[in-house]
Length: 357
Image (cartoon, rainbow, N blue to C red):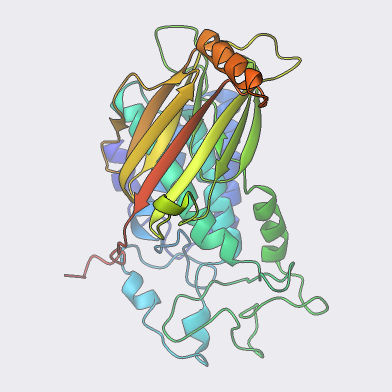
């Protein structure tokens, strides 16, 4: 791994990003079909170099359509002013979208058992969250659905309104005069918003020591899942920051509730384990289980500081008893609930530039 990382250093500089990312995705598919370890190593080293040397704080990369010298992003964002073409020429939307596809595929390959596997999962989950919330959601104009940006300007004194007469999409797209590659990938990106909210480990990466099914809850995106392996339907309802009970409302508090129900056609509910992602940006967390859920182990941290995973076990017998008590009060028969509260704090991130002191 160290040799691969050393070989990758600087290897993607001056390459056309959105030509090479599909090539990489093809190589990853070839690895999945053939098991060739060289292809896996190339994909892992590629993403490590991209993430460590070329990404902005929002997860995007590139100046124009290419990757510039690694760990020298100060040169890329030094341009200023709303009428400066180069101040708008950053972070092509297609590149962000395909970088997320690479990351998610790597996450699916899993890591080694133990803390290395936790670190692998959380590293990619953190990147996907960053890119989704700060990158993808900002590429479509909220007031004009379907209007997309080609470039995501990172210079000073600029906006996504861009320069009206500039070429190559340095402004919002128009209904009559634009048909960019980033409009196509933008539509695909918004179709994938809930893609990685839940994640089921592959058998090779799953928890060892038993047949109990395992599932990870990684993203704070409202989602519903029919979990075949556990015979359950899960409904995940994260709230906007600050939304909650009046006594608990705070602009720095993010809350969510996970409800589980029996699901017709999937058989009887089975014992299972959920892993809740506790992000690195959270300065404090509270996991409150009820019904069939129980917290029996402390959270497992990632070795690189990218967060923690909290195991929550589900017992179907306890869940059924909980559902009967609810039914006696005239409520729907949920088998259990987990309430998650995360406190947020303002933070900053240094630009990836090795010359910065």
